[in-house]
Length: 113
Length: 117
Image (cartoon, rainbow over all chains, first blue to last red; front, top):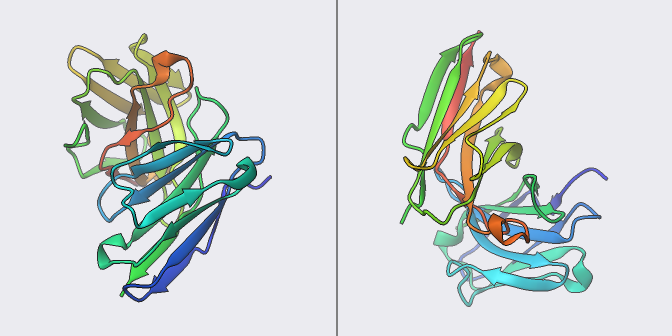
């Protein structure tokens, strides 16, 4: 297993378009997290799943954002009607239980023009 | 409301010397703290953590100190190496004591560490 994989690495989209990102966690990890990072800031929590259940969502996750983790494996994060303020690095991470830090993927950089 | 703050945007250190990165928090419910390192074009990588029942945790060249009364933690890197040059984030959780792992993390803004040869 090569770690947490995110696809695509980069996405440029026009304002108003919908985008979808995919995250493949480490296979034995039961928890999957989505974070967003803007320039000069630390990652901000968006949501997390334990297996297929979405346990918590941040207030940052407006109605235009939706995340799924069917069958407790990979996850998708969809942003509808993108806005320029959505431009950021979207990071996915996974973990097994807790105690140690979780493993992040390399992220998907979204640019909304 | 920035609950975790890293007030130094950058730090420059000579190779072989000590690097000290600082972090302050405001939420007294935080009971678990972590440090991550991030290189450009990569995701953050876990370095070291500490629970609130301890005041020090050491792993090789990295030591984290926690002062709960001051709501302050620091990461010491000794000796510093050029390969340590990266952005360092501290993060905190308020879930660890529940015994169900720490879930959501709140991150600071990061400190850019540069270690000069």
